[in-house]
Length: 257
Image (cartoon, helix red, strand yellow):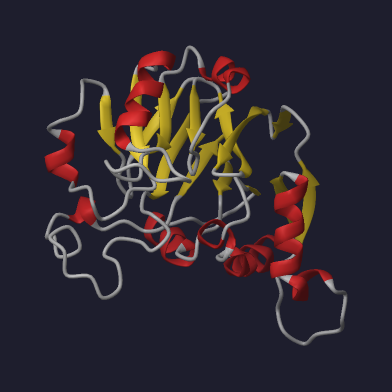
């Protein structure tokens, strides 16, 4: 199939950077790389556009990257910073005159159904609501010719999914990755993974923990995402080993499939 392009739509933590009310040096930074919307990526291939997670900043992200079409959404888990932008798919429904398929674990789809009950309650409405279909992920699946491999991980006590597609993988919001999932993350050209900050966190991988995972998996390139305002882009990049960098909003690269 034709090559796949991955674009990082958002690289920030759940509160975004700058964080409301914060006067720290990263939140006041003039470096545009330190301005981080909530975490999401866009996959583009063969005329198709797939978004992983609809963050609360999805509208802004879609406008910023000039997104004209949306063919599917994959969800990593049901936390607010990953699903609350779902209502903003409505323009794509109107333009495309079609439902948009949503893929996630059964638990994640149940959270979405509760959170956006107005989409699913079948009550008559004169308002525009998102048109969607729900597709539980039970294992690897094909999406418009792209093979998608779910990668189970843990986000504290919560099961979450990462995704592998070709020689790249996206694994945000995790604190641990079981050996069975590590086996799915070998031989990667690009790995995007959670690295919240330097200090440990009960639900997120730290910089040192993610570096240890990278040392085990040995991807050619690795990019940290879900980045808090503890990490200044240029300063931290200067300290990271070769082939490892902080992601930033707008980062884009080709992926071999």
